[in-house]
Length: 120
Image 1 (tube, rainbow, N blue to C red):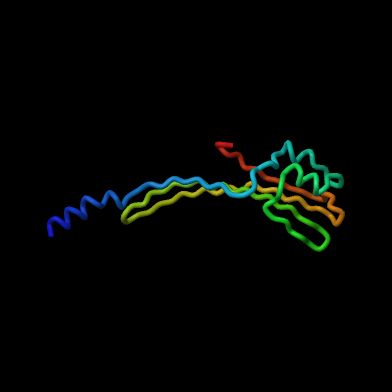
Image 2 (cartoon, one colour; image 1 turned 60 degrees about the horizontal axis):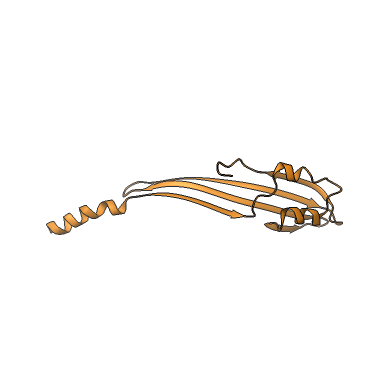
């Protein structure tokens, strides 16, 4: 019985740990202000946006409009896994851009947001 107790006591540190992680998903961010500022409502075509930014994360078809949606997700986190207490801190950021085109594939509206990342 004493050996089992000693074995359990010695194996307790193996049940405790720290966690750090990073996760990146989506379309590589190419829609920075300098790029997007070159697009002009009423003049820029859908082909121009696709040529500049590449394939979007999603294409949405509305009644008389088409939407190109670009998304990039970045997560960072850390945590502690203990016997009686677990803690995780997760920071998720979404960089995104959305472009609306009329039935003639001409840009009618757009918006973009890029978060400042420490490692970007």
